[in-house]
Image 1 (cartoon, one colour):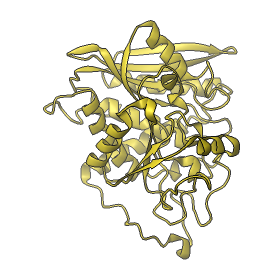
Image 2 (cartoon, one colour):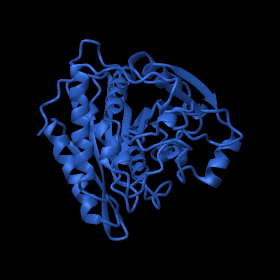
Image 3 (cartoon, rainbow, N blue to C red):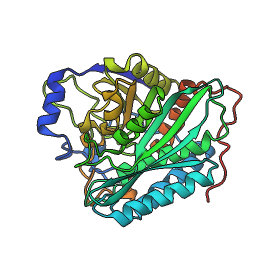
Length: 353
């Protein structure tokens, strides 16, 4: 896995806030899973290597989880039954994996939303914690496949690490509301979780928030730039990005380096706030506000997929092979952050219900 580091200044962040990033795809870009014209498909970037049998099995597991969430339809407070159905479906699978489940319910104008929390208690310093989180809701009017990728990866990680014995506690958190109009408000699921953590005097040593992780392409021109004031990103949308600025301390470098060591995809280390909404980082907002070390791991879908958050954001568009490789690399990173012994069981989760 390749690693590069780029510095984004306040001008670029302001440009993102003013202009947005999800309007149109780059010239020559095609939807993930779609067909590119021959000229646009030419790329100097290597194609993805063949997956091993175990990686293929993980790919199929992730495909099943994304499809299950997408099949529920729009998961937003505008559709309270669908949102509640998603929470119940995830809760059943979390409990089937052997976790005690905490439901953190909160009301939004008469609609019940829920954060779902599953925890591994630390064996040495349980008062310290690593939080790994993702949202399971999606924008209004969309089936939300891009949003479902982070929630699915989180579920798979929780299964694979159920038998681990971390030195510090690990909290897997599925946030109930993240999309506008709740992003960066007191009604955002991650903000509600942070409030509970403060009440419990939790010592969050690291928070890793998962944005979309399923939009990739090796075609040149498939990645849109931030803007004219910024250093260029690679033109092929085949990398994952780690968002973190100086407030995260060394966490951004640690996560990016870990993904590089353990993964098979290029990594871009972006020195931008972990809660940059235009890059899929809205879930980090509550953690950043408390100055807790936080990073966002994202495919920057807003810069590479015009279907993100629209009715065309379907499960068939997700690149499950690369999603599987990102998930495996992230498992290794979480093990290191939580100080899981090297001898701890890997991938020993129960079978899918």
